[in-house]
Amino acid sequence: MSPFLRWFLVLVLPLTAVSQQNAPSTTQSATPSQQNTAPPQLQPRPGGPSLPPPSTTDRQITLDVQVTDKSGVAVRRLQKQDFTLLDDKQSKNILSFHAVDNTSGSPTDPPVEIVLVVDAVNASFQTVNYERNELKKFLLQNGGKLALPVSLIVFTDAGTKIQDGSSRDGNALSALYDQYETGLRSINRSQGFYGAADRFDLSMKTLTSVIEYEKPRPGRKLMIWFSPGWPLLSGPNVELSQKGQQQLFSTIVAASTGLRQARITLYSVDPLGLSDAASVRISYYEEFLKGITSSSRALPGNLGLQVLVVQSGGRVFNSSNDLTTEIAHCVADADAFYVVSFEAARADQANEYHSLAVTIDKPGITARTRTGYYAQP
Image (tube, rainbow, N blue to C red):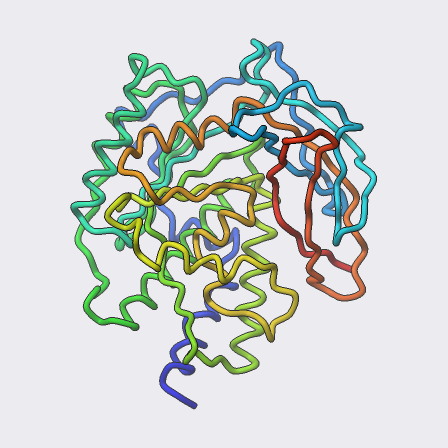
């Protein structure tokens, strides 16, 4: 067995073992009692339409669907009959349909939450400081009065700090952010492959912990991850054993299902911006976008940040130094969208991959949603 293979099995096996029971041990929550400037708990605004409650069975799958015209502007006032939902290219009956328009004066209850994730593991100190300034610009705009509740997650070598609750008070959030320290770095970035492996491992454990934290929280979450992405650890010379591929496939299924059940739409904003725009690295993730149907096809690149972003129905931003504007582009998805549900197919075997697509019966209009799910017997 090669040294790489021995290492890879050690790396991947713990990833699928992270569960709701042990997630808090790797995640430190910044609660109001721990942070004097922590924002108050958000109270739901009464009177608005409610999003469909989470299904009590995973047979009914809920999708958040963004619909835009050719210029990228949200399309409103569509009806159920305008939508066609395709499961493995076969039309499915839409069980429920709900149009959300947060600009109409009738906000959703619970409201869509914006989650800002600062990745200090896969970015330099200088880059993280730039992120800090750009995020604070976003939080402090309009006098610190945010249209939607926002929460913070700071991901460092020393661990991950998750804000307890969310707030529309940008001033309080900015003050809270000032108390988060990046801390000393324990990962040796000069170790090449092994340093990259450590960052991949820590990134996946953090993603798992964040999913488990968000899963019981109601409503849709737009999670904006500020990072050039974690290492893909994939290439022509990478070979995995059958056991390694099986463990990796289980992790892929768990990440996909967890993001869906938590109603998380991921977004990635590359803080390197224009300095990274000409790099081959920023488009390499596109090689791994196709859904994985079996363990024999699994590669570490299938768990790349940008891959998970696209598969969750989110967007990848990697060609601008104006992070504040890119945040606004992500947040705009909360203004108007549609919530549809359907009955999942009954699979012939566990973890059977099904592709998803939503089409609109109107010219020049496109829909963006999750690209697939894993069905069960």
